[in-house]
Length: 322
Length: 265
Ligand SMILES: Nc1ncnc2c1ncn2[C@@H]1O[C@H](COP(=O)(O)OP(=O)(O)OP(=O)(O)O)[C@@H](O)[C@H]1O
Ligand SMILES: [Mg+2]
Image (cartoon, rainbow over all chains, first blue to last red; front, side, top):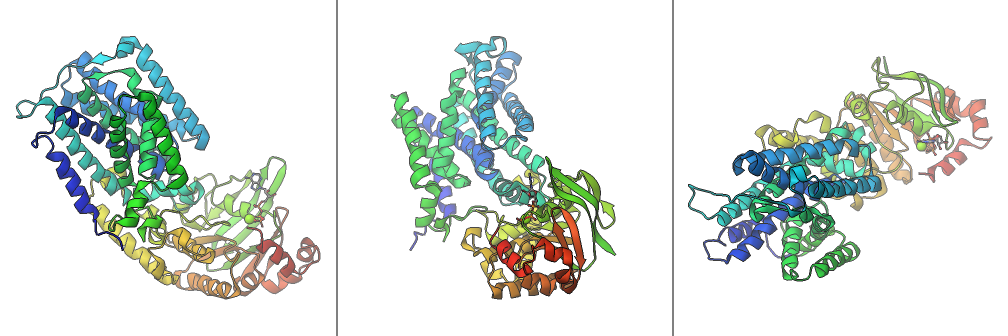
């Protein structure tokens, strides 16, 4: 007997729970952590589209996250654009770069794609640090304070609601995409390229879509992240960032939209608990990935599906589904 | 009228000539068998027709138009359906979703229209599901629509793969050893299904097969390949008695070779 814990009710409760934090008087630090968790939800969903659904083992997500953050921040600082113009422009830059790196990546598979994308991530990190004329170098770039005037909210609360709104919107967009022929084409691509193309699926086009969509999610996350922190620094987008996104997807459930959300929330929470010990964070994330791969390869979402009903989703059958 | 034809097609992998000067033409409404010992080039023949391998020389035509040099996905969109020697069901998808994937070329959704949940995307999804259920009914697998690929027996997976190819309304359906590993009863069912696909859907079929019972029973004509060359072509009786065929199978009865082949997936 599975618990009647329908997804709609849980999601509605979660959104309402997040929405009432500020008026309920949660302290600013708690709101900041909740906001960070929401940013990572976007990153995890985007990465899951690429790795989990389309099966492209690429690790460029952290770099694209950085590109979104830098582009948004620099457009404000250097070109004086208001945030509400700089942000979509930053997303467009990240998406465009995501599609451009997809072009060479289209020829690479498996391990080679993984290696090439890690090289790209390292190159971006290097550029963030050393391309000082543009990025302001190792010290990072400090951003002007945002203002949500004339809305009657503080900057922190404004960014928080903006993030929450975008998480709801973009989860919905992702969900819709997955339950159409686009989602099926991505999974077909993952399972067998030759069988997918025998069903008239254009591999090049759908790989480019997968890279573009995940880059767009990373870009949105980056723009919000820059606003949330008020500063963009290069070391934020290092290998640790790469590993965290990957850990969220794996722990939550590869190829599951809800899994990505759960994984992001859980790991941001864990990261905060271990905030004082960065080495411990890395070990904990590594251990969690290992544990999941060995004992729970379908991720936490499979566990939830086993004990609660109503969590079926398109393109994902696990033992928990029946 | 000729549906599918190959003219003097040759394919080499390095020094190995997998196909040499292969010419064959399959008229509309025929079920054509392709047999030959292991490594004869049968799968390569399907790969070259579907654009997975490019012919070094020669031409491939579908409905009289050359499809040589097109991408596999373009060839599929022009009306070539295919199944594979090993199961290529998409895991994670339900049986219904697998079959719906076969409709890809008929649907219009793009990431942005799908993401924004346009009405026409919702409508096409509803129609796609209905069409897929109808095809599942046609192959007698409707009750499994919610199963995952990995919950099905090997034989059931093969039938779903046929349904997945069939829903794209192919002019020609290419099957690579559909009966491999099936029990005699299942082979009978497959025999009936293939006839219904030809008669009720009007699909021309080219089938690679080692299982003699099926090849001899259902095929209108049989093409025999050996070492990349066509060594015989004709009705079942003629081919079985053809001296070159007997020699190709080293004097063994075709059945013995078939048994060996059936174990090889
Ligand atoms: N991509 C490839 N690269 C190199 N050699 C190949 C390739 N594909 C097939 N071959 C070789 O071409 C020859 C014909 O192979 P093919 O798979 O077409 O045989 P087949 O008749 O389908 O055999 P089977 O009954 O075993 O399936 C074999 O010698 C095979 O090793
Ligand atoms: Mg073969």
